[in-house]
Structures are given as structure tokens and as C-alpha cells.
Image (tube, rainbow, N blue to C red; front, side, top):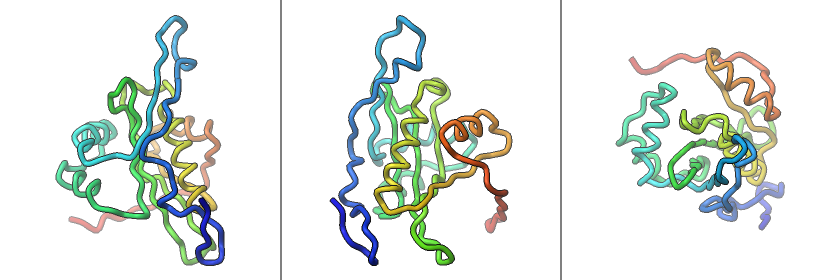
Length: 178
């Protein structure tokens, strides 16, 4: 499973088992007496684009269906889009990008999006997707993983902190499109 690349040991990206993962029981996060709820994670496919569009819109991302389908169709060895399904219904997405900064040694994982359907928040779906993203980043030789979150999303900040993430700096953005 492990190959040598650039003098360091890391997983070959083709060896990462993300096309279909075992279902994970999230019943412990629900009220007593409810039926078992299973979450399945897998790589996003082009057919998932309409559902992903709805998810991204829930957080105010401006994305169009054609661009989303194109992104899912094109192969990018440095980007992973994983979805979570609850009862065979699209319930969440996480997008992980692998970057190689010149100013520091090693790769980094960058989570550019994590969206959980409003009806599934608080059930453990986000925790499962976050763990999958961390697994991919670690297996790809990343020394760290990072993300950004809007200042107004205080519940999300608590979620990230509860999952071991620390606030370390401010983020600055300049749009290059008029």
C-alpha cells in the first residue's frame, strides 16, 4: 500500500479506498427508541451534482450545476469530494484539496467545503466526513489539515474545536472577478 515518492513514504493516491466505505451506525447520536441510522460515505459522482447543488446553496455558496458537473467529471489527483448518505439520501459533502506549499516541507490538506444537510445536522454526519478527510490527508502524506469558516457560523466553530481543530489565524480574501 505504501510507495516511495520524493524520498518520503506516503500512500499512492490510487490505493486510497474511498469509492465505498462501510456503513457507520450513528444511532448513539439520536434519541432513545429510534431505529438504527447508518451513514455511508463514498466519492461524489457526476450524478450527485443536483443534490450537491442544494447542499452548497444551504450555506450560501454560489455554484451552478454545469460547473459542478464539470468538476465532478474531470480527474484531479489533488481533490477529493466525498459524500455521506443517510438512508440512501445525500446528507453531506466534504471537499479535500492536497497542496504542496513551497515555503514548508510536506503536503497539506485543505478542506474547501463541508456541508451537512440542515435535516441531518447534529447526527454525527459531519464528524464522519471530517474523519474521512483526515484519513485521506494522512494517507496522502499531509502533515496538517486546515479549513476556514465564516465568522458568523459559531456552531460550526464549536464543532471544529470539538474535533481537535484550533483557530490559528485570520484569513484575507480579495475577489479577482468583477
